[in-house]
Image (cartoon, rainbow, N blue to C red):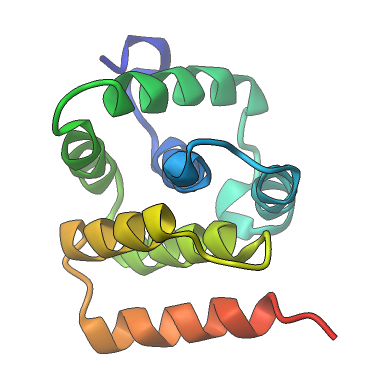
Length: 140
């Protein structure tokens, strides 16, 4: 299924997490898109990342979401593509995308829970990451 982005790099996996989070409520908002692009342009993990790979990642994410148990399969693929030290980074990026439009929809909450469990993140660590995302996305 990853033919268009085979093999999936760690950066691809991080992008896939952001995209699946944005699609968790069935659509990607403009704010979520800007969050994803801002993240790619800002974080050191994406230095020298080829943005042309994004369309392939979007296709892969959509294909997984069209399958029964596709989310679990996608999370497994992401986990296998990421080194252990980037699991929390993936979760943090997902939390930031979920928080980008000012509220976290039920579908996004469920996705975050599935991602937390799929990446074997400790609940306390995940809560700290979630709180950090909330703090970064507060409005005056």
